Image (cartoon, rainbow, N blue to C red; front, top):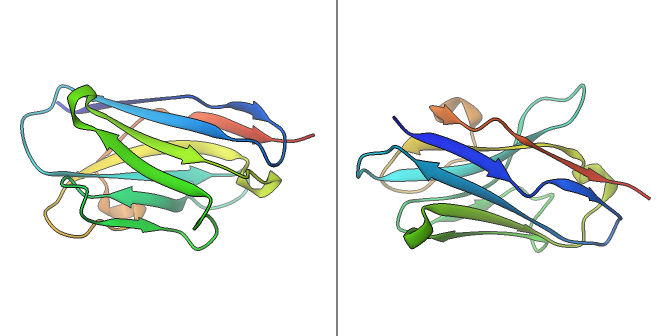
Length: 125
């Protein structure tokens, strides 16, 4: 069955960049949307960005528009989240998730069936 593994988190200073990776394996050919979500301590899980299988649909949370970019490498079965101009409020555990979906992706965590284990992103001086 589909498995997702995130990597690329770490500790950076405000204004710096990180690129998160979400490697997928064990899936049958199907149409999947991939979403990136984050959860900070004491807060609900928040949708950050998503992309549908064809890459024709992307969505971003208002808080990250213009700073984060979601992309995919089909040959590597990997989805990336490029995060620029990081702020302290971006500090959270970041998760990628997948759902079998044709059409526009959604930033609703309840819609996603498979989740990775998460990777910590800390933005601090």
